[in-house]
Amino acid sequence: MDRTDDAGQFCWVDLAASDARKAKAFYGALFGWTAHDEEANGGVFTVLRSQGADVGSLYQLKQSHLDRGVPSHWTPYVRVSDIEETVARAVSLGGELIIPPFVVTGVARIALMLDAVGALLGLWQPIDVTIPENADDD
Image 1 (cartoon, rainbow, N blue to C red):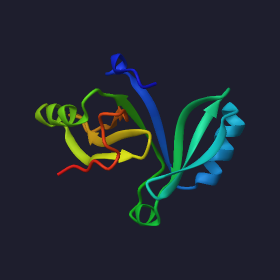
Image 2 (tube, rainbow, N blue to C red):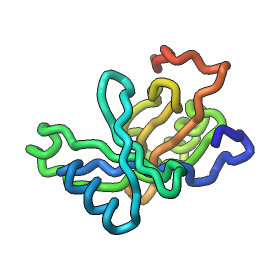
Image 3 (cartoon, rainbow, N blue to C red):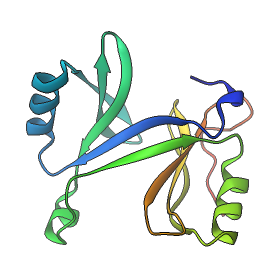
């Protein structure tokens, strides 16, 4: 999953759930996905697996998001080789940066954006030895 020649390919999907427990049960019954909680960045998210392979993750929406009416939603991620360059190019093409790049400890550097037609898209640069895990954007 850490191959740089996979840049431009969809590589992950997250479910932000209004009821994470109910979502785990639903997808377990529907597709046979198993749920495995993992810690990252001071919180917990759930990795979803199918036949031993990771297929995505889910997490509980914060109460503040629920209070503002944010619904459950999926976010697809596309693998990139240079997240800062990709963000800059996306913005120059009419995209809008929603969440600047940040590190998900031991996993990837990610960012969220709206594309030129308003669709949510995640950018995913796998962590490797050249990217310090404590890297923050300016």
